Each structure stands twice: as C-alpha cells, then as structure tokens.
Length: 168
Image (cartoon, rainbow, N blue to C red; front, top):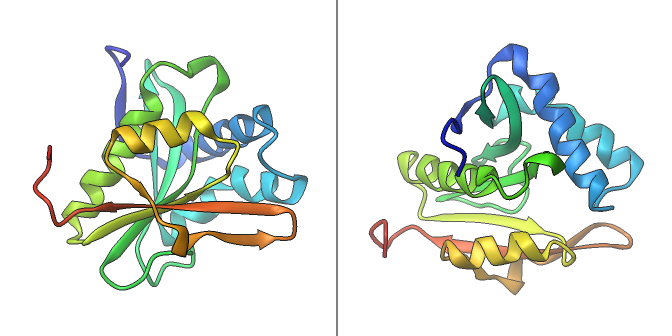
C-alpha cells in the first residue's frame, strides 16, 4: 500500500474526480457500456443516498467505491441486516498501489460499524483480479445473488459473513 494512502468519505470537491476515476477503471477493462459509464461517473448523485469513499494520496483520488445499506436506491442486492458496496474502481495508473484493497477493507469496517451481518457485492465475471482480492479478504461466491441488470451483462454475487470476529 502506498505510504500516503488514506481512505475516507469523499469531500464535495472530490466527487467529480472520484466518478471520473471509476469510469476510467471500468472503461479500461471494457466492463461497462456507454450509459452505465455515465452513471458510474456521477459520484455526486450516489453521494446523496449512499457513502462515496475515496482512496487518496497526495491530494489525488486513486480509487473510489460506493457503500450503501437498504433502503438506499444504491443497495441493489442487499437485504435487511446487510450492507453492500459497488462501483469500485481504481485509476489504471494506480493499480497495484493497494487502493482497491484499502477501499474494500474500509467497506468491511463501515459494514461492521452499521451493525450489518453481511457485506455483499456483485462483480463481472471478467474482473478476475477483483475476485482474487475478495477471496483473499474472506468473501465467498454467493450464486443466489447472481443476476443480469441488462441483457448481455451477467454479475456474480459475493458475500462476507460479518458475524465472525474481525481477522478470522
């Protein structure tokens, strides 16, 4: 992890940059169509109904994630007693910096802080580096959460049981 890396809630002046970073990450992976890239880039809208967290270093936004709990409209696959994160992206130039992992760990901490029993997410099958990160952090595949938001896009569900003590 970068020595200067900090994860925190995005400040109002960082929301546009945060959205650009996520859109750039998805575009670099070919993981989003044009309409979804516009939605991904709009971190300002997400911040109204969810928590937008950023990984920053020396004043630059390296990565961003949206953390939500029901009944937020951004909580698509979570139910009662659960939290979820989505739209995780790290600037292509910052990959390998630890920003992605730091953002996921921050979501785990937020989920515990709000008393969630589980933290859930969905990811695209092609995002193998993310799958490895989730597995390393204790997430397991949850096929019951697999779904397709639009024809041709399949999402894979993952769940982390938070009832176990941290660090287990």
